[in-house]
Image (cartoon, rainbow, N blue to C red; front, side):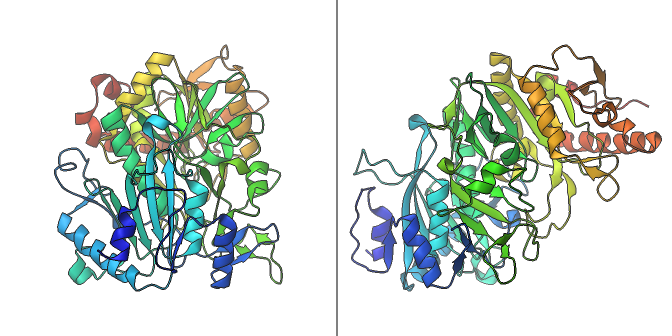
Length: 534
């Protein structure tokens, strides 16, 4: 048995002695930062955060993600452009090549961690990284291992080697970069990309399969926080729609900023840290995130002001998708344990690039499931390879690339929870008003915060509502001191007829998109969808 084979089978223990000095196990964040700097792979900012570059890939590459098609997945995975099948033979071939490649490396960083702030649903994970800074990301984003059973072996293993590339001519994948999940062998292979987000989203995909299908836990791409009275709110949305920003509320405790599970008793965070976008970051607008960027945090693909070590958060020369990872306890009002009761309020966040949707509108349970399955938003520049400006899209469950089951499966669980706990659901547009991208303007963050506060304070309970002419959404006619023309989108366009035509176009896109899901959802969800009238 080779050293690496032995390593993959080692139990989780507080102290593991390896007979190879190049295998660095469970190093502290300070040691990983020091190793990164010594290897010339990073620098410290003036606040003490480690600054690194992820290389060629500064965002996820969804078209290079695959799932092994076998007895477990063949009839359960919703095979599509995101859930792409590969054979077990391809998985074995690349796994063996990666292990052989890793065996020739001078150094390898290994870490045992855990996902899920819920003992009954926790997942133990062993991660093998080529770079110390990738291992720091793992340390920041996951929980420490559970040492109560020292003989236990990890549930899942991740092998991440950015410098290992596949040969498409012989390895059965279309490109040199790849991410492959095997539910039978409980392993994730990541090669050819140093973008750390592939690690966390790989485990998210695993949980999105295991928890709903095997444990009836709704897995969610959302942030969560709770008020002083214990009231819990969820914020669904894709990257760039405001999940992290809006949930980091100084008046509420943060449960988590991206991935959660919802049981019949309440919600829990999957992660031990946050992975926030920092483009245009300002301390005045996002103080919690700004002050979390300190020793132990890791900035990705940012740049310094010339001649300094001060980060220029406006610099887009590498990517729009500049990021920071940090442990959850770096947020001053983080909630520990990172869990809460059943939510009272759900916000669906969408970044409407066409300026059609109102900034705030209310949904009933069936409408909520319809919009949850639709997941209308815009891909924000830089979040994915090749995206340079907002592009309108539909992403089922506000996270289609990470959802291996049919969207109707998740929606059914969501509807069950909404009905059981009488949850309010609000659709929030954090995108454009007064016109589309290039014509209108992005709605001010201050307005969005005011609307969300109004919901928390129950200010909209008795406010008159107008029905949107094409979407049927209920729009409050008044919300704090926000101008009425901001709330009603056809009033903030200079040409009302142009708005109505654009609104019909987007409504039609909703209809076209939803047809692919109709066979897997109930009739009441279909009936709650958009019905265009002349």
